[in-house]
Image 1 (cartoon, rainbow, N blue to C red):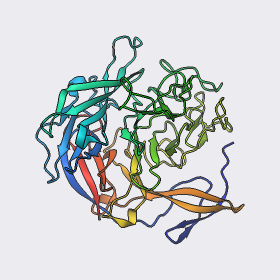
Image 2: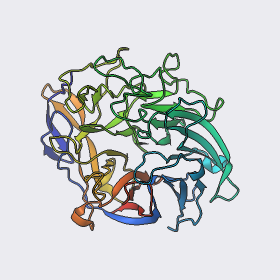
Image 3: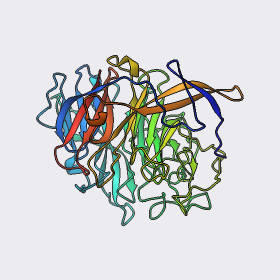
Amino acid sequence: MNAHPVVSLLVVAGLALPALAEPQIQSLPLPGVRLQTIAAGFAHPVALVEAPDGSARLFVVDQTGPIRIVRADGTLGSEPFLDLTPRLVPLRPSYDERGALGLAFHPDYAENGRFFVLYSAPLRPGAPAGWNSTLRLSEFAVSPDPERADDASERILLEIDKPQLNHNGGTIAFGPDGFLYVSVGDGGGGNDVGVGHVEDWYPSNAGGNAQSPAANLLGKILRIDPDGGSPYAIPPDNPFTAGPERPEIWAFGFRNPYRMAFDPGGERRLFVGDAGQELWEEVDIVVRGGNYGWNVKEGMHCFSTATPTLPPESCPAADPDGRALLDPILEYPNSKNTVGGHGFVIVGGVVYRGSAIPALSRAYIFGDWSRGGFGAPGDGTVFVAREFAVRSDEGAPLRRWAFSELPLLGQPNQRLGHFILGFGQDLAGEVYLLTTDALGPAGTTGTIFKLVP
């Protein structure tokens, strides 16, 4: 049920490597890159987006609430473009996954001045008693001053009540189709069970928002049309427009799809880093109506809430409606795994489409938050993954992924030496690392680096 075709050969830029049945770390030929400091003084920078208005300005979302501008000349705006702090649920400075989480500019921002944010608001009136907070998707408009948003222009599009403080997801992005995509976690806690987690279809598991597309929007990737309807329209080709599933859902079966991004080129595929729980971290390429397995599977492996650290020998290959539980394109063991982990939690990245580092062209660059965990200084890892043509022993053509750690020249041990909170990308396809030295959203150690030759 979890078998994979045996792969006999992997070709990497002309280099033949042995390829295993499951994607894992390989020794890929990689260029040396360096880190260029772009801006500093943030608390927890979690998102970076270039405004599509020809200004070459980078907008940085700080988890604590401010959205700051890095101008084309490299200077940091003295005042926030927008400060969401008064709208946020109070954050825990020691550690928190809530806050200001996502930013997306309308594709026609240069003409209409519209942009969208995703943030954690206090629990709204009428929400279930005892729940934690409300995830809010809102639209704002820029003011006559291009470096300031109109703070009074907020239009709330969508609110999702969350039972626990963690697993918020948090990315919003316009796809190549012009629709807005939103990543939402399973509601929090552990195992996708407990208060606020609905009964699951799989008998050995006690609950599962992620596997319940008819019940709620938790554990899902959403797709909406903010240009139609009130407050938004459902794109007619969304997979569940006929019900009983929620029509906003594009794909489901995610634990915490904290960071996702569309490839700016090629097939414009949607890459999602889904945070694992006990043993495995994963990267998915998301397709229309796909079920990505949580909490019946963790990565490519069966999962049971009764024995989270002991994967069952078998589990369903499909959900009750016949949709296959889709495997990730790659996985790696986390620090809890007895086989030896590569870090604590995955941070989804971006496909490199820049010109400064040609050797990284079309590679997926992603990371792990930290190798040392909660009690140690930040020690994040940057990975590079590539997709290659392979053949199975039966001769069937396959597409597989391999990945390796990216050496960062000039850094101690060629490693980052900070917590990774996210990856950014400008309109030229160049890549930025969003880092901090603080475990929680506090202080001023947040720094933005750019990958350079």
